[in-house]
Length: 94
Length: 136
Image (cartoon, rainbow over all chains, first blue to last red; front, top):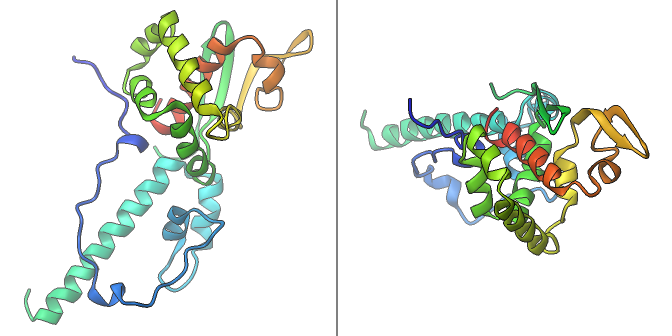
C-alpha cells in the first residue's frame, strides 16, 4: 500500500463546480453581511427566510469545521439544482 | 465523522486528550493558523502522514525553520495566542503548574506548561491541528 496522505479534509476540499445563479439574485440591490458572524455560519444557518437555530447551536456544540463545510456543500449543491430547474422551466425545456 | 470527538496521544511521555473544536471556533482559528504558519509549512506538515511527520519533528533543521517562520509571522497575526486558542479543548495528565505536574487543561496553564519546551509545543500544536483540520 502506498503512502496515505491525510491532508484531505478542511484544507483540501474539492471545490463545487461553478454554476450561475438565477439572474434575479444578482441585481443592483444588495443585502448586508453581518459584521460579527462568519459568513459560512450565516449560510449554514439560513433557511432562506429565517434562521435555523438548531444548526446554529450544533455548530457551537457538536459539529466540527469539516461538518460545517459539508453543510455548505450540500446547501450549495441543492441550490444549484433548484436554480437549474427554474432556469429550465423559464426556457421551456427539460 | 465531522462531529466533535475525543482523541488521545502520548507525546514525550505526556498523554494529551483533545476534543475537536466546534465549527464556530474552528472557523475563526483556521485562517489565523494559516497566517501564522504560512501555507507552505501547513502543507508540509499536514500533507505528511503521522509517521513521517514525527520524523520531520525530530529534525532540528525543520524545527528551527518552523520556529523561525512562526516568529516572523507572529507579529503580523495574533501571534502565539492562536496556538493557545487551538489548545482550548486539550488536557494532559501531567500539566506543569509551578513545581508540580498535575492533570489539567494545557490552555489554562499554557505559559507554565510549555515554557522552555517549544519543540514540544510545536509537536502538540501540529497534532491538535491535524485532528481538527486534517483528520486523526
